[in-house]
Image (cartoon, rainbow over all chains, first blue to last red; front, side):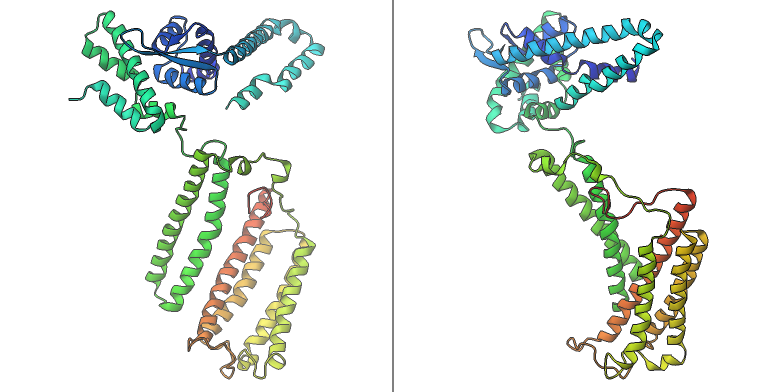
Length: 140
Length: 323
């Protein structure tokens, strides 16, 4: 794959694993099961990223964990907390908003560009409010 | 005998804080076993499954860094610009001073060219390495502990924008140049009569060198007025400045070096435990004259060259962390 494309894809996907994990773990699950679920769902995530991420989300209070020793192999089960669910809800809303906004930009570009009076305010507005960049900035 | 899994887990845990180890140990082993089982179920041998599962998990030290939330860099993008600015500023200010002091001390001690160059190079490398190391160490500690990070990586504001010299010579430069030359002439004449009972400088030079020096200083005054009227730093200005500077530096250095500068009858030098203060003072004056003269010639030529190309020259001391 083209290195430039790979870099941009990585940028775009960064953060989606958090939303996906918080969403999946509404029903309790352990590290490897979550890894399987996510990769079946089409999220490219590696074990060495996911396992530390789960502990970080737990430290932030978005997940809670419990050791299940009922089976032969004891496993640490994670579950999304109320706070985690609230945040996941907000993140999913943001994801939808971005999806809609990008959809609007790509489908609405033709009629707007044909109208020079309307095109200026729309394009400058969407750049100056800049929700994408400011979110990325505060995330890091 | 330790298994591959044991070796992997031990290696990862070594770099994880003690209080998290037991929990991560259990969880990591369970996750590895799960992955191995899944691979065995899909037809791999157990040995191959362990190998591929661990290979996929990757470098255990990297995994440990991620578990511990440690940054995988020494100085991050927040601190990097400040680190770069501070280090360049320090290197540019401290190294010239160290080399100059070292060279002067060596000249006074044993003026042999090999020792002078060797000392300068050694000093340059030693002090440079120390500066780089300690500054980087302090920044790496700040990066890891986060102490004071908010203070020093303060937001950039317009106040941090550097100022640039006008290509015109300013009135301030004219006045300071004229006043300085006038003071030197006055000092040279007055020391003969008023400051001390016996003149500090050798009166024999009134036969030739002191009048020459006064004439050169008067020329210097005319030079400053001329620069101001020309209005800026041109190549002609740079050349005249270089000629004038060489014209008074060379005779003065020669007088100092051949011990004809100070009055042999003057014994008012501080007596520092029998040390030859007069020759020390001569050495220091030679160094100041040579370094100062070179500095003046180079900076004027530099200004002229930048003015000719229309490039701005930053005023030292402006622009945030710059000095």
